[in-house]
Image (cartoon, rainbow, N blue to C red; front, side, top):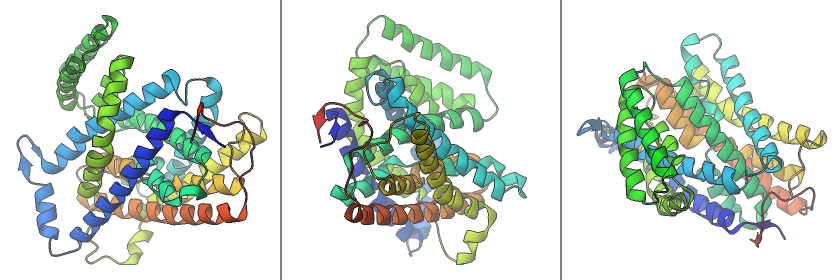
Length: 389
């Protein structure tokens, strides 16, 4: 029997259910974008709502809450969770790094003749944990718990890499005055933490002020969410994580999927997938992810750098395929890469949808067949702790 911590079990369950809702919201966006309601859909997204458009409120404001939760989860995992020790971190870090580097390299190779597309190199480097966990939930007993835990842990490291990429590669011209203001607010939050302040309203109020400064500074505003998470003390952090989890899983991320997955296929032919940008993203997600993650796990275990998880090689390959579902983060980075080129953003959506769908179908099929053909073998050490799943 595989053994996981109760916290890991709850996290996996919430991600899985949220992933199913995300799939439904994204499918609905595609249907509406290709229906008589298309004009209303796109008009509403670009309508002004106060200082921002509806689309900007979703991508810049609500997604800052998503990144706040990502920051809380990353901090918790490094403090006492699945990434607490060097041994626990080794395989997920290796797999996540390779799973980001290989897709980026494939993307740059395919778009090398079009320098204007190079800004999108990070689009296929991300993994959508909610979508992938939703498929694993549908697979049920056909996906062992150790596999779910490994994929979740790789995705957490992947998220950390994506946040760093957003902060470093997709930062516009900086407003140093507002950036200094953001640093002062962040410093004050750190002071509150050192003084033992545990009241969440204090940190959340300061987090909103931090977001305003960061938004105006040129650094993408969602980075404020991760930065704020690092200043919140552990007990308050755990409370906030429990509060945010259902809102992010069942409202914010599905709303993001609904606002960003809608692309009209009117006038398009299958040949669009052979255009450099969609093809680079498609192959980056489908080929790059599986090659990077599966090969790195195989090499790491062969060299005895890390123990092999409790899963067959076929199951590990199926998991590597599922990691090619880039969706949420890939769409998000695509919008940052080409903010003034809506035609390229539409191509990004087509590449992300095609690559993610192909990865999902292939990964689902491999894991479904592997569970019937190969009994789960107990090899290596489990990645998690105390409670039976």
